[in-house]
Picture 1: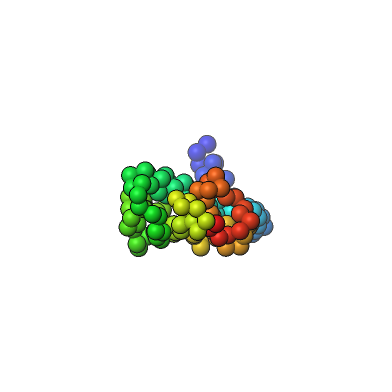
Picture 2: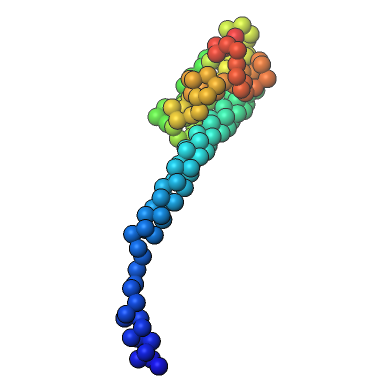
Length: 150
């Protein structure tokens, strides 16, 4: 019986036909065409979330600095991977690839704006890869009417 099974296995064709292989390759190609754009969109959403988090954390750091230094005026500074904060953002650590810029308000003493930049961020809203946090307007602005700090 064992000899009969071995003989049957030797006589059968083993492997896949060219058509079967082509069908598998086409199916994998279709799945990749669907998945890659979705992945890239999720990646941009992750960068956007890190920018928003950095802006909120920077705002907390600035507010803490203001409480600790009530007689000092906000000067403004830029923080990124290469240059850590000096005064108001001294203890703030920015996420990789993000840049946070602190700008003092020209209209009100004690007011400030934070700008978050990342070249990989979603640019669907304003085409500038920027998020803005305004202390006088209630925090993070989704779609600010004016990109400057009042």
